[in-house]
Amino acid sequence: MGCVIAGGGPAGAMLALLLARAGVEVTLLEKHGDFLRDFRGDTIHPSTLQVLDELGLAQEFLELPHRKAYGLKMVSDGGDIRLADLRRLPGRYGYIAFVPQWDLLKLITSAAGRYPGFRLLMNAEAHDLIREGGAVRGLRYRDGSGEHEIRADLTVAADGRHSVLRGRAGLVPESLGAPMDVVWFRLPRHAGDRDDTFLRLSPGHMMVAINRETYWQLAYLIPKGGYDTLRESGIDALRGPVAELLPWLADRAGQIAGFDDVSVLTVALNRLRRWHRPGFLCIGDAAHAMSPVFGVGVNLAVQDAVATANLLAGPLRAGAPIPESTLHRLQRRRMLPTRITQAAQRLVQNRVISPALSRRFDPSRMPRDLTRIPVINRVAARFIGHGVRPEHVTVKEL
Image 1 (cartoon, rainbow, N blue to C red):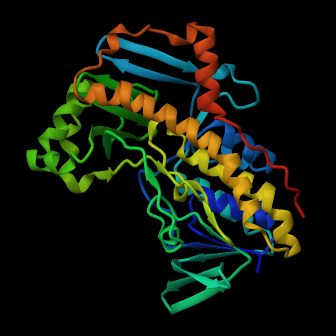
Image 2 (cartoon, helix red, strand yellow; image 1 turned 90 degrees about the vertical axis):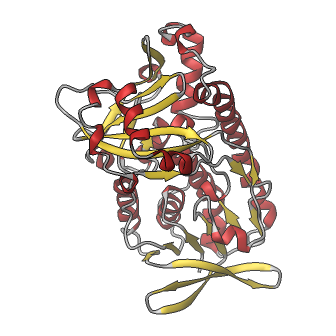
Image 3 (cartoon, helix red, strand yellow; image 1 turned 135 degrees about the vertical axis):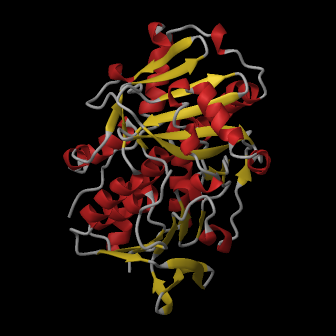
């Protein structure tokens, strides 16, 4: 068999689609019974929209319920601050599309299902690797009927930031640090509310507000490891900042009944020094966990998948052995955008988020409209919209 992929997130699903489309026999394992997990990354940037376009899926994607953001905005105590205007980006897609991740994954896996070489196993949890002759030759997984094995020429770990298979391969990520964790929750949206998505910043507090049409998806940033302290302070310690930062939501803050209504993201920023072993490869969060800064995690994962398929689909289809040197070529290609993106995330974490949470950052000193500075807007828009070294689908459909 050509390839087995553990993890049905954006990296694994997109790689499975691209390989199946190229005539490779591929099995994708997802440990859950569906893709319905709340508060997952769902900011689809122009780079990913372009990939969907190249696959002939853009129209299907845009038929999903979604909301477009044509720029990035910060709301301070003194008013709005425009950070970037994406409408000036080259290409067809000058916006970020907000779509629940499960809708994106259903679209991608449904498209993969049109190809005879694709197989999707749900409720299938990969937990170990098969090794023969010093190389990985597949994986072991468990489902409701027991333990199973799948043998493959290439085994891909796309099983997230807590990757089990990465650990089984003896690969340990290097932590780069993060000063915050994120508390996610939702509140109803009323007709008179704002209609945009934005970052709300006030000394001591930061919150991201995402317009989901019928409700607000809210992300309240807290100091790293601070969730237990927040819980001990009682639910009013969360309701209070909501009312303070977003006064027009004050009448609904009481609907956060307790901490059972919230979800906590323990933010990690890390990357592997080595992404591969013979017959084995890590991509997406398994190779590099991204901070929520810029909302680029999904898009970096998709770019990894495209680069992997472009390089490996031909050898996998031919049944030729894949030298570890080829896997290292892929790592070298994707390491540069990973390093640069994470460096930018660390800069924002250290210069904005950490000082803001400790009341040492005053946004009132910032220009009110950074989009009027052409060089800054062009660099910011391209970095956020297209990223570093955007990948394009070059592998042919068979």
